[in-house]
Length: 552
Ligand code: F6P
Image 1 (tube, rainbow, N blue to C red):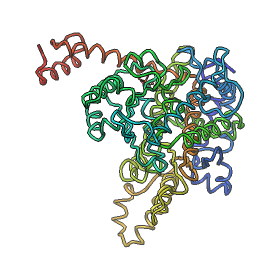
Image 2 (image 1 turned 90 degrees about the horizontal axis):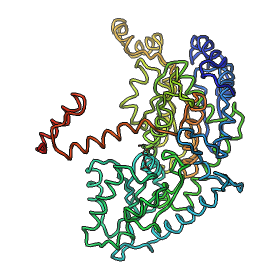
Image 3 (image 1 turned 135 degrees about the vertical axis):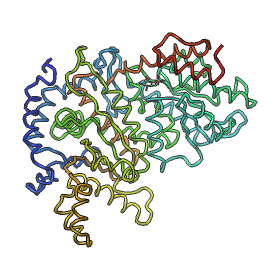
Image 4 (image 1 turned 90 degrees about the vertical axis):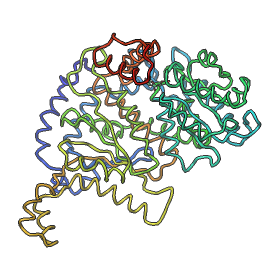
């Protein structure tokens, strides 16, 4: 492996030169020139089918991208992560979310100690607890079974479990509703508490560090609300559980550590869904299905680690992102799930990818001289078609898109799924094929338009096309399929970081805002005219304090 900046690698330079030649051939032409293109650019792994034929690549491009992955040491880096080496160098930690879903029998060592017995012990405790809540034997302070669970967390302690609970709603316990409160905006907690009864509500306070301002503020307010309902301090144990690595802070808060499900500092927040942070999901779908979810991820992990680079799905997706991000200047990446149950998947992927790869320095601290993580965004189709797709089709930006769909619906209803499928396939075809002036002319002529009308509208109604996409298909959105899908994106993000030579596992960029918020909060509480910031920030604070009549 070379220590050169990625852009100095000969494989990088070869791709730069190669891009010019590929760019002159349209996607339409690539398909017209090769009847087997669909067969050549597809992969199957862990229950996921990937069609990546609608991309600006030839077999030569693919080989050149694979050569870049080889030169970047992707396979060795995968091995280092899976085996517990310290790959999060700035926080001096191994990165072992893969151990949380590991199904083999080998030990996984951190500082010489096997972490697997601890992982299994927490899973066993989660099984006992979730069973008790689900079968009604865990009762609240008035002896009634739990009907509502409120997860209080933010970031990785919210987005993953929320997304997965929504995605697997068809498998949910019928009598248990799971709510999520994340925002420090009191409206989030207040509106949620209006829906639940203190006698039958279980609060799950989820925080890796147990120091996060938003989560602790919401947790304190939730406890106050609970205690106002005639419950006593002794009843808190029946209604509050904690998911954390910080037992001391959990006890200081007043949660019985018997109700604490632990994990470890080698689990990054945005990679923690597989740990105790997955408890709301396990409460919703039950522990057997939670374990199927883990096994889907494990299958994808094996594939990532063992499949040759050219047949490796996360490697392929990562290389395509690098290809468009760095060689085609595409600053964003659209995630378009054609599945209502995946409506929070883009939001979840935003944290996974943007907190991981939104970095400007290499591992050695030198500033990067190329683009790193693109902006990730999206909303489910078909809704997106009536909102943002106009820009994807006819706007000026190149926006590579991932279409994600289950081939079979879990809610078969008349023609609904046929229409969903038709729309999903139509969008990727339209993005690729576009509609040229001749085609438009023939179409408008056919519907009786005059030459003048056609002339006026030609620029507006033609579609350039040539816009790339991947399509990912699963059979059904089961716990196992969801596990594989999430792990696919986790490993993709890892490969991108390996190529860009950045640390995907720290997040120093969130610190400055947190520190400033703390000091501004102090000033707001003091209630004096604020002068310590720039004129804009002072002005905004003072104007707000004045309106609230809190200026002393
Ligand atoms: O502020 C960013 C962050 O540290 C995320 O990485 C993390 O997922 C989130 O805050 C919540 O952290 P915690 O689980 O420690 O409350």
